[in-house]
Image (cartoon, rainbow, N blue to C red):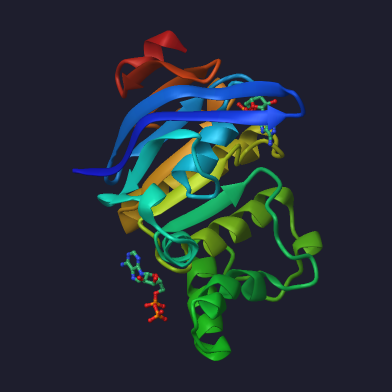
Length: 234
Ligand code: ADP
Ligand code: ADP
């Protein structure tokens, strides 16, 4: 059962007179419920690919399908609907609103989706509890650790119950031990909620939970390995 298909995804950025070929044709199937890691050095095209798969930017050529729906054929409103309901996003720098408490940050996507503040808050509290932060509901981001801030961001990504969670370098601002805890949390959420997880990372130590690893090199999928195959390579 395939949830995401990318077909020959290409991205060329125009930087003044220069063209930057960030992606040179990536074709990939992501299975429903799998944990897929995109691995590659800085500048290899991970974030660009992440943005294409997440519907945050459009490819120069090629296509991305989510649940059988070709993102290129959607208008802005439909794409916004998919981003809100089908995808959750996690970033290296957490991207929390500093003036809002944990529960207020996590409630936001539900409020954007049209739910009442009271109901959104209740759903947010429930998911914060699930990620181990039930005791930090009314703390501000600056009042908790980096690992806890990323847990808040994970709760925010999950609060609309998306089928897919995309995490771009989720451990990039964390120490090794905290990073491993965050990867473990994503793996637990995958298992408990049945979601598909896609992470981009440059760090081979963050692959332990992966079912599939895709090496990106110079904008190409250089190699794809399933669980049982990549452990020997790393
Ligand atoms: P990674 O996430 O692996 O570090 P990126 O996807 O950010 O790689 O970048 C891939 C290539 O595309 C790099 O050469 C980068 O400089 C270039 N690039 C990324 N974003 C832009 C942009 N908005 N404009 C121009 N070039 C970009
Ligand atoms: P409206 O408020 O215009 O009646 P909705 O809020 O239901 O529409 O949806 C907003 C947009 O998202 C519409 O363009 C609709 O076609 C699209 N949309 C709604 N449900 C889905 C879905 N399951 N998959 C893809 N697009 C959807």
